Image (cartoon, rainbow, N blue to C red; front, side):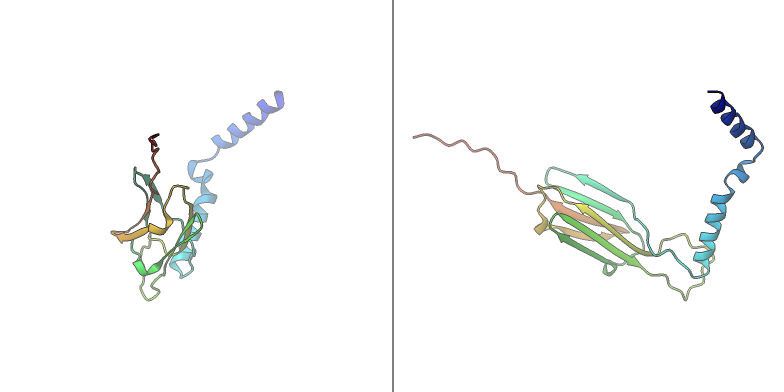
Length: 149
């Protein structure tokens, strides 16, 4: 127990002697280098867009937030119960960016479809930066009573 207390005390002393800027300097250096790479024409060639998955009585809906894409930049495929969405947005290297905060590159997301989904009827639209994928549910069979004659 004494060694643990000594270790905690040493950590606290070291932290008190640092400023917040010094504590996070390695991380800020990484971000600075990353931003420099982007501005100098290098790029990270992948990103992961955010999404919402919504369920209603009749369908599942995936809203994928990918602004500034064109619908031609997407590929949606179904293989068994796997729905895969791929996209790519390329950087216009002829433009001189003073500030560039938007994402460029490729993404690929794969979703496992629920057993009650109708993969033959999946539709998609791309409006206002949102790729929306509608996955209808299969009609559920209701219990039917059979009359005895």
